[in-house]
Length: 336
Image (cartoon, rainbow, N blue to C red; front, side, top):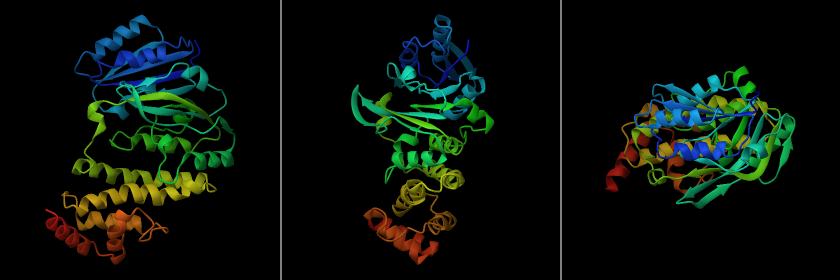
């Protein structure tokens, strides 16, 4: 049977939510479909539940593997997917009814819908494309980027979910989820994929629900583990962003991302943690690396980012990592 859509669901210790996620797909009674459950070395009953669900619906297949993280699980799903398009669904989330029928349109490289974040089944926030629009060449995809990337964020592009991706583009270009990244890996996958697309369709509907768990409402963004991931993300993000800008040179918002996202969101986040004196990663070498990124931002000025970054930018303008370290250590001691 020809498969139109492969839905890949990484599963790790998700025995309380996996059935809901799968049912949100299979309830559609959409026949040219396969659901790929990738049991990523679960230590609870998730693996057995996956096998049970597969025994009840021949559209479901299961892959069991050693634990390797969500990127590894998604890549394992991509290895066996048979659909014309792939969609990614997390095991604690859900796809809205009629999503597959509404989104599937032949001839497009990527189809993009919207998402909502739910806490105790109430919508906390949501984002969706403004209209149903067909972008059918490179210049029009540049317009798509300008419509989708806001002045400060690219919410609709940061996640690999609520989208259909043409599988042949993924395979022909060796696109994979970066298994070393634990932060920003979705963005890197989407942005890399966009480097190869010619046709995009946007659907102005919420198609995906992020169902927030209590532990997901807060996360440690100041730990050395997180900062190490940010340094790795910066290393991987730069060439991907350069490739996108080369492919879509007319996109104004894409050209702004280095300033507002790469520098304003990630580099300045690291500097802010350093300024609080809470990281063993605050070294002259690491500050020099951040300053080298900042030196390539021709829009960077004292007042070009949010006011809280003025001191960090002023220190960069002075240009001596050793002085910056001494200043951060002094201010962190004074604030205790």
